[in-house]
Image (cartoon, rainbow, N blue to C red; front, side, top):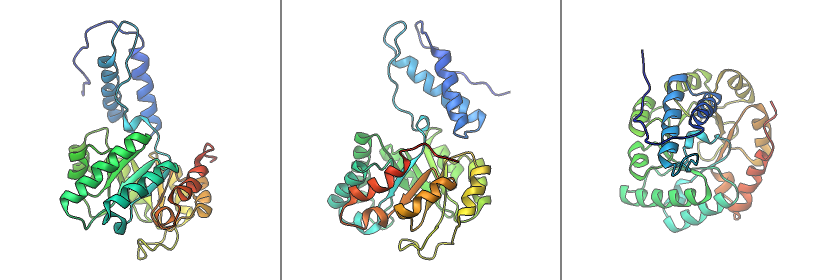
Length: 278
């Protein structure tokens, strides 16, 4: 039998049970397995109690990434932009101003010191805008700067190892190409979201396997965690993918490849203004 216990917080509190129950329900609705949902919700409620100052008044605990739904525009930084840190910051700032909810820092070629400095600065920008920063592949960099999570490819760090290193509250995404079984396996391994694609011709990954809309329909019926679509997706093409089941639309060139990054991001972001119709 597994028990869930935290040190008692001195004092008398109103609403602690409701807070715990609501957190569990929210996590279960996100598709988090029951044992993990209990653990994460208990940690959240414990922080809330510790933040309380007087009887009947709860403080505002530090935001928990897993309490916010993963839905919206997911902007991924292009490698070339990462070679110019000042331009990178300006570009990411514009994407955030346009409505990006997640930023993925994807720099596989830079030196460690520059990558860490850039990632830390992007984290500050994301925090200021209420967005989340995901690090591509590098679990240690994510842990070192306190990023919101990491995105893993098929040949990157095993998901279970990343979860142990980053903790239960981290957002961990998994690339699943065009294979539903990989998405199901990633979900069972504890992924926070799964990513399918490419759906259309892509300059970023031209050799990636082709995925189709039917995959999203099937994934929506069988996968509980949020689904991300990626690969050559323009705003005009994104609407159909959102209707088919995508919670996140990831883009690189569609956002950062044009002269007006903020406007490009806004064109994607406005597609999420209405609740999903499925």
